[in-house]
Amino acid sequence: MRIQVSLRLDEPLILPIHYNHIIQAVILRWLNEENYRRYVHDKGYEYNNRRYKLYTFSRLEGKFSIDADSKRIVFHDRVKLMVSALDDNFLQYVVNTVIMNDDIQILSNRVYVDEVTCFSDEIRNSGIFRTRSPIVVYSTFERDGSKKTYYYNPMEDEFGYLIRKNLINKHIAYYGCEPSNSDFEIKPVKNHRLKENIVMYKGVVIKGWSGDFEIKGSCDLMKIAYNAGLGSKNSQGFGFIDVVKDIPEGGR
Image 1 (tube, helix red, strand yellow):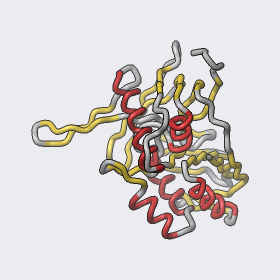
Image 2 (spheres, one colour; image 1 turned 60 degrees about the vertical axis):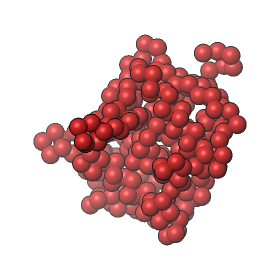
Image 3 (tube, helix red, strand yellow; image 1 turned 90 degrees about the horizontal axis):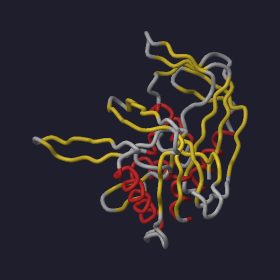
């Protein structure tokens, strides 16, 4: 399930260019049940010494300009934010908070809630999906006594392999069992140009990829991919996908 929050701006919304951590903090504030908020933020769903928050969010969408000198992004008129979660309770808490408040504080900016829309889409087993926040896939390893991080691109075999493995782990963490069917494939749409995104999150460099992808998988894993996000760092605002076009059964 997912929601779209449409915001009206009486004055320009001015944020750092790298604003993921700011929007993440706003969403967590919207969780109006303290114990649940603490669970999501501090613990999450655990499996194999990893914790999964199982929610994600899009970039802010709307007319904007970039102030290169101050390294700020300036949104004008209206913006939209989409939030998606595997647990419907997460979004229920968010909606309850948002609809009870006419305005929202984002740093020093005050914005106003115009509309909240809930979506419970029928999730298909295959389709063309577009990222609304970059997909991040990485591995960490030790070299020369220090930890290194390698970010994969969609043309590397590890990209799809690690996304599938991550989805299976999320399923086990949330449901307590492996999916009944673990089929999952992802590949870039032919002749479509992908974009590498470099995002700073609290001083840490994160690399992800945006664009259109052809995705096919089991109902179990497609549900997690759509609601909880693809790849890693979903709760930091990565891996949000939206369907662009269905693929007929038997067609690829």
